[in-house]
Length: 115
Length: 115
Image 1 (tube, rainbow over the protein chains, first blue to last red):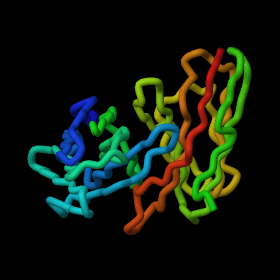
Image 2: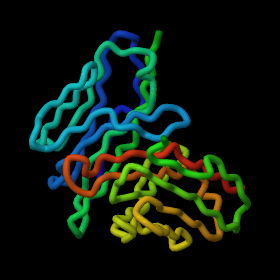
Image 3: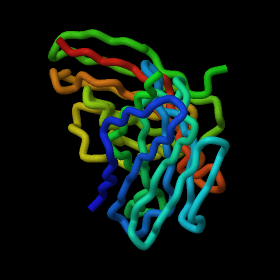
């Protein structure tokens, strides 16, 4: 079936510490895994993504890892700052009956950065 | 210039009414989407259109009717509104092929409250 599981649902970390959010997916044909950040009152914004031909990708304080065999991927935020507080969504591409993909989202992780 | 713009931002209406939400994108993308975000922040795809053609319909009640007059616009009309339709509705767009395929750009959302 089409499923993206995300954990934890809520995460509180001390400012300066690292935060890790984990996701698993069910469709072995999925080949695109984006992460979105949603701030209060705004739409989700893409912060990093990874495609299945890559195991790891990094952009400044944010990194994503992908394990296709185990069908799981993770978001790592280092040196967290107050502005990192938001809801984070993982997602995976699901192939539909035609050549188009749809993006299915996990249930989100509310990240609190504590001063 | 706003890349994906939705109107209205807020909509409060009575059960049984009919309402519409409009969406426009100026990114030159081929594909547009409607997502529904409920009170628990779950993001679920509803519809996807590619160049005015419906390509994804996620078994949404037929009270919901999307309309795409051209590839830059995707409107959502909802008939006979029910309490359970209360949510934030997000429009998004993406390229269909190439490096930008599946990379979603979201609008700011339209919060619908049904009384």
